[in-house]
Image (spheres, one colour):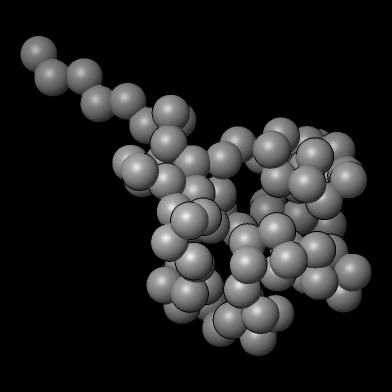
Length: 85
C-alpha cells in the first residue's frame, strides 16, 4: 500500500480515515505486523478505484491501474521534498 499512498499523494492518516481504521492500524498493516482483512481489501479497492485482483498483483501493477484522477500531480504529493544546495 505504500506505493499507492505515494502515487496518490496521500498520508497514512488519509487512508486510515477512508478505511475507517486508525493510522496506527494502517502502519501495522503496511509493516506486516497486522494482516489486511478481506473487508480491508474491498475498501482499499473502492478507495483507489481499482479491482481487488489488481491490488494483489503487486505494487507496480496496482499503481499502473490507478485511475488518472487518483494520481497525484507530483509523486508523493506534499510528502516529498527535495532540497538542492
